[in-house]
Length: 320
Image 1: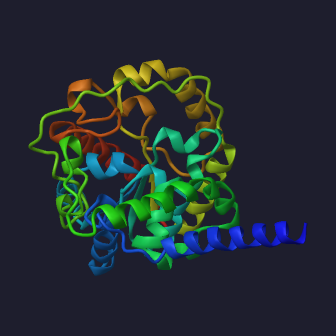
Image 2: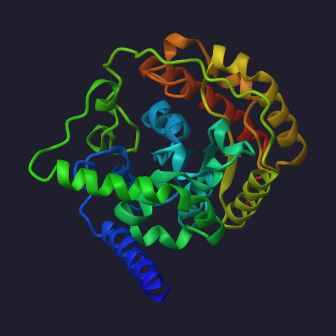
């Protein structure tokens, strides 16, 4: 029995060592991907002096905003902080919160998945959050709460396996993306944080997304209210806009979306720029998913955002 216990202990120590050492492996074959653009986005945000327009959310923001248009229309530098919805809305906003300054205009644009009360919760993040905080931005580990770790532990085996796989496979060669993934590269993000690698590419086929019979995670709305109050106290304006969404996917998910809209109208303190239906668009305006707009789609969506922002700002009492 004692020998069996020693074997279990030894096995546990080996598993722990293999897992722990994976954190220190170079992120081979992955270093050029979109997650690493967070470093550039952070640097761009910090480099701007004075008030900024900041759009933040998942990849619907990264693919779907023309920040140059935003800058011209709102007469201040615009920075696109969108990267990946799988980072979780909590991390995405916790990461931004300390950088908000007086005079900023912040537009929070979550994906619908961030709001659903499902298991595991996308609000707290997925595997990519492990890559972000263990490989890309280790300093951001401070933003990962104990409750988040209770959700993230299930992604550790996949994360560890990929680290060893990529370290071995790409030890002597470079990873070459294909198809739509060519656009998902750090080098295809411009100085304002927009993904531009897809602007000259053809659209890719994608399935309809159905968000049916979803329940709302009310903790997300409470969190947004807390974020709004913190930013308001810092002297910033904060608004919520919903993700761009392909129209057939929207109609297939309309019952859940209407439920979410009702909950936000009743409980959200953050001003909402427009009803969710405002940002549904025809399929020909999307690049490769029901949330990722192509070049024409992002220009139309940006025009809508500018119009809605100007209207909302005119009706709001500005923070003192």
